[in-house]
Image (cartoon, rainbow, N blue to C red; front, side, top):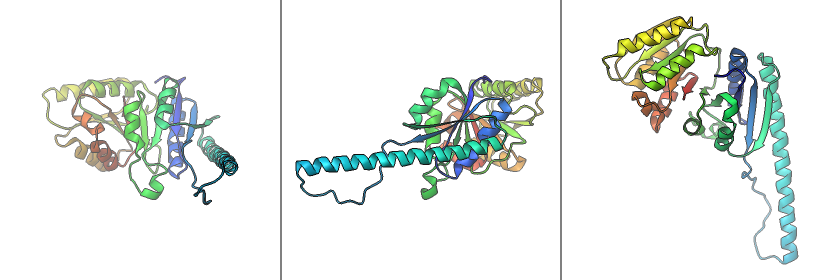
Length: 287
């Protein structure tokens, strides 16, 4: 992570936005990085008019109707922009109250994936809510954007839960593969978790070099002044991780995305949702 790059928090108009803002503010303070709060408006969203536009109409009436609809569309667009500005300004004040100096806000029309992909060269960490605006009515316990963004982006993504408290103990799901080794190296050099105790947990099918891999992880993190605890627990990766988090009071999980390892399957299909649901803690997905 480069200190000059920003933390980009993606927020929508739901109560989950407060938790995204709190988490992003914490990360910005820890990394001494600028914070930007981004809210994307859907240009295609339309409010259905109560007027009856059915039936055959003449040319003049048709033109008048088009002008009326255009005026209505512009009014709705203006109202949406104003509502978005008020929403972002509230979150900006929230971030300031949590110790962030001069956070930026950005309101724009567009599509989430395309917008974030275009922005990622200037971003060191994305912060997304696991749930979003649609969960207010559907009661989904995992937002539909999380896995899609993990597939699209090359930077770490911090997927946050409904509540946020500053983590006091973090865990990395480790399997000795290239992806999770890079995760350990990232953890060793980033200021995001410096000073916090770290648990390195290996699960899944037993491998002959497991102890050697854990020793490497322990030494790498200890050299960066981390207080490290390692554990080798055979069994289903998803169940082992969830149980360990619960039993040991882990506040934040780090895991690799798309590594060629037993963890790889966790980022495909229902496994991702299953792990994120069962973990119940903010999860940093490493690329």
